[in-house]
Amino acid sequence: MQLLNYLLMTQPTGEEGQGSPLGMFLPLLAILVIFWLFMIRPQAKKQKELRKFRESLKKGDKVVTSGGIYGKVANINENIVVLQVDENTKLTVDKASVLKDPGDMQQAQR
Image 1 (cartoon, rainbow, N blue to C red):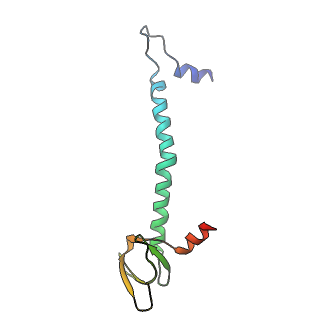
Image 2: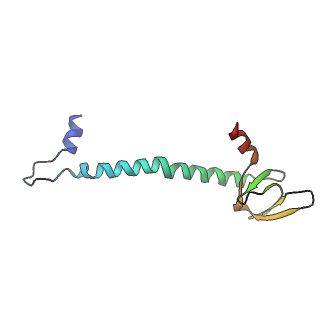
């Protein structure tokens, strides 16, 4: 505790108002750590999960697109997914627009 007080307190250098350099940067460092913990880290985790989900897509999976279209995967190419939205209706969408499995939404609502 005394070490923390020593680092944060003003050092007697002959000039008034000068503090320890660590004491000046400690609040900025704390803000950056908090920002990383609550903003950057969770977003990176969500992006990683979404990328993993898109890579694991297979024929027959039920998905939702970013436009809100529900469908079943009929065919997958490298960057293109063909969704069957009705018996006779198929849509070709970019793989990046596939967001999630609608089953995950139903489990989250319970």
